[in-house]
Length: 532
Image (cartoon, helix red, strand yellow):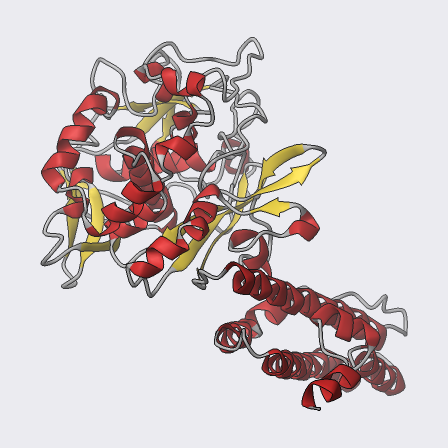
């Protein structure tokens, strides 16, 4: 069986296009000639879990002490052999099999009944679904065996995404289906390091930092804090680093039968495969004091910060506020890694940082059921001038608030247009996702123009107006698309469609007080004064 620190099990792609497996310390191997560029797992959720695994490793064993060390290490990477030495201090916690502690597993539950290994995959049908024979879309028995590498990825993916699993089976440290945001660099090392927090910032108090014993960081390494007596685990009870290694589920992979075969997940031949696992309820029950995971944005709810979770519709530019810039209107704070990155932009610009994006991803969960996996990549605009950054963030807010207003007006107008003859005028189910997705390219093109126009007030105003005209223009096309069916089928009075269209264009007029306020436009009088 593999050891998750010593053996090569992580699928990656190098600069020259070669793909292969590496051990964690090899993320900096051949860095000057042929560096590892990105992860290359067979499933997108595995890639999302693996990047958190690597970030968690570095944050645990060799984080920078200060901002200066953090920026210096981007160019002066930690050599592969040095990383290997760092990892030795925690190697006993990363065996996938064996008699001692097993990675992310509870070795005390081997007598529980065996479950098919496909139960580790979040989207697979549960026991009740199979019993009711309602697994129409995702079929049972499509995954019967996994290679050890994929089994490890599936196990960690399940623990970090933490969906509910029935009575007593706890969700993850961030609840079920948390949104994770990761700053992307040009190499895998850059991506990992850009998401590390200097120790002086990571540990909020000296007491927490003193809890260095392995069982305080890795819950499976010692006596697991079970929740069978409704015991909660707060951030003060253990080391804050446990945010990367949370274990809400009690699972034990079964290695008794290890047949040779091809993995049903990655398709590769394996000298041993995993067929089943054991599970038992009452894993670690994390309380609401875990409001500081470094890779997740949080929202304020009744004086408690809670992690953002994915919702139907996915991740679009409407989420730019809350992912890249704070959203004070909804009390959303960006992740700690994004904050750390923004606070170090002056240092980063001196290092000629050019291309930076934010990779956001996660499962949209309906309790224990996975509705969809979403991911997105957004540009991060580097502004080292505090006033310009504040101006840019305000403009972005203007654009998004205005888009929301136009969408609400559009939805209402379409419902008005198709009402009548007993039809209640329901909003088209795909309207909102189409609106956000089809105007996204326009949004980022507008931000690119604004980024280079922050010193010119009139030019900013003109760009805003052009954005708005194109936004309304596309919305009119959507209106016509959704109402023409009504006209053709004669479900409605054509006059109601015409009236609704006129009403929409009236409400979204460029020079209405509402639009001027939302977009922060210059009034015509003030524009004339600037010309004098």
